[in-house]
Amino acid sequence: MWHYGKTVRYVSAHVNTKWAHVIFSDIPGMTGWLKINAASSDGVTNVLDILTAAVADQRKVNVLIESNEVKSVYMS
Image (tube, rainbow, N blue to C red; front, side, top):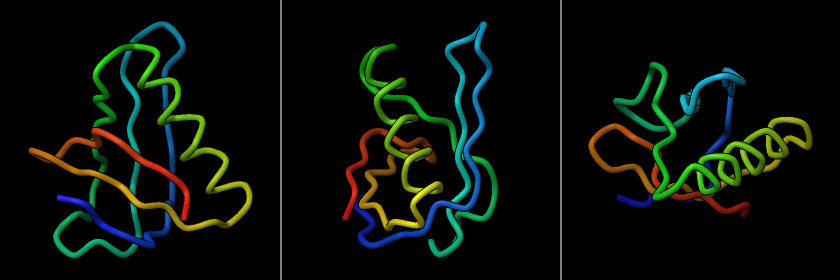
């Protein structure tokens, strides 16, 4: 399900794994860490870069969440 105009609170990734996680502050029912699970490892990196930029610039994002995982994102 797409969620529009959302605020990214925290982003975390570990350099030696393909795991990355994010917390959004304004999506009901999504209060903990969500795994970033794009279609490819480059996709995970791209989503992570967008989310990190959104935090740094205090920008909103539109995010696709399926099965409690972030699948896609773009800045508002």
